[in-house]
Length: 61
Image (cartoon, rainbow, N blue to C red):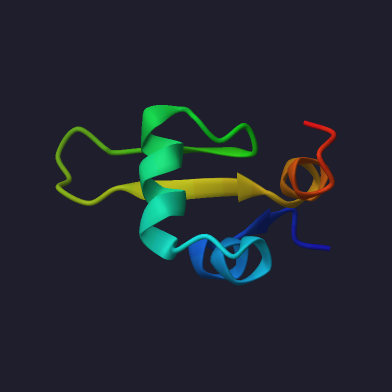
């Protein structure tokens, strides 16, 4: 089983917009993942852990 999910998947399951997910991860406000940017890159990458996301949806995180 893949342990991570995309911003798009998290958006569909949570009802939040993709932009809200991205902003929350960048700000460190969503406890199920994080955002990071390489030194030489202008683009952000996002990592959302499925188990933590599920706990968050269920109100346990």
